[in-house]
Amino acid sequence: MKIKLEGIAPDMIANNLNPNVPIHPGEMVKDEIEYRGISQKALAKEIGLPASILNEVLNGKRAINTEYALLFEAALGIEADLWLRLQADYNKQIAKSDPSFMERLARIRQVAAFL
Image (spheres, rainbow, N blue to C red):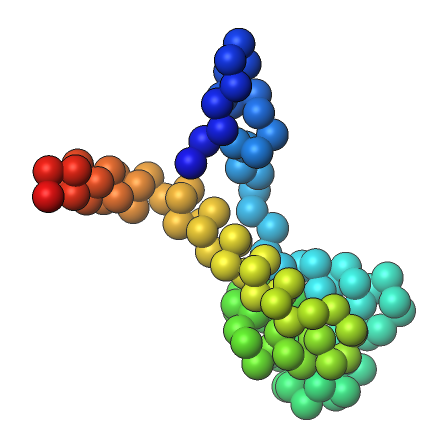
């Protein structure tokens, strides 16, 4: 739901804006471990994941699921719920950027309005 303020265009209100390019939460994990000086290989070993799978997560090719979020929480001290919310937000942004999916939602909403 968009926020409306009198005299201000809805697209000029920060809460109504979506980033142009969604950022996969794996990229944020990648930034965090780089900041801490932890290698991907060391983190993979610590949390018991194959390095190839961790690399896919960090490069946005694999979603952060509950298990991965809990592993990151244990290793980095950043709550699993944050990683899961970021993943859900990312998934929603990707879905909303798909014009055919948005058309489908619009059709469903039109039909639902008459139910």
